[in-house]
Length: 514
Image (cartoon, rainbow, N blue to C red):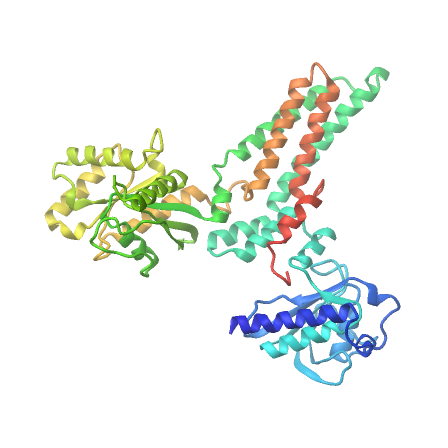
């Protein structure tokens, strides 16, 4: 059904493009009376803004100078009877010639500049059937001056009209793609402008610094510059550099929350790694077998752990094997462990020694083996999962649990059984706490970096400020160029300077109609 709907929408889009280019009979292009002269050449776009597929209500958005014309033509309104702005009006939606009723729905009029795009805009709220949507899109395509919107074009127009900054645009894109509660909160905070205001504040301070330095270069010999102006610049530059460096030392929390925490299940063969994956995702995602070495390749699944996104990976059991395929699986497993944000080291607790200290020694040795790619294994990036507790007698299980809670030198230890789900709730609590620590609270403290490009430009900005400090006493012109480069780097984040080359990259990730 989804593909059928998509084909219908695509046919409508192709049809309207042909109309816009004049490949259909001229009567369609002149079917709407009262079109202002030259409006047929204007750039007005339309698209389905709600999700594709059969639904109760679909929203078709129009933006541009021909929006009012489209509303009058298709809602049977006269030139003087446009509805009050932002008030819904129930009308029969017709074709552009007004001969056939396509649907009965709500129309809303948003005159410029009080609209999402800053342009005249119209929304048609219609029934969400495939035939209705296709008919309305085809009718819009027959209105002079209209064409189907490109992906992300409405948001791009909002950016170009100054309705949204570039960081806010990215926040909007993240909000649309948010799959967990924490992602939604972070995206909403960025879309509200918190991150953009932080960078704009830094940009404003850099502009003042640059103005003072250039004024000193141009007018200091005429004694028109106050004493100590460069000292003020020095203080501001040092403070800004320190702020940016603290901002960069966020352990990638915002980026990790945006893309998902990489959690890897690792350990020896037959420890129950695949069983743990299946238990967590509540479906048979990985094959489980008593035969050692069943898992060869990486098995991935996305999960929501208490509102935080994780990408959970099951890996091949770590052992020496003569089998070339299994050796490749082990190599990939170790590579994935090296890339992991959090590693779940799974151990068959039935094989542990009864003596607590000996058991700790065995576990520490096993941890070093699993985390061999790390010179100093980070216990805060690791959880030790003792599986198959159901195979132990109750007294031994309780004793092991007590001993593991008392020992030091190990990461957090969870005693579970994937067979009976015993201890699973406690394990999920510990896992949630670890993931939350890795991502941070998106609503508290200063806004965090969410995009790799932000980090790259800020690093360039810090390096440029270091250039100012390096040349401040020897070549003031070079020092001023450092401040100018820092300002340019910040401008590339907010879209105020040199944004054109990155706009296409950002907006291409938006869907048609947004």
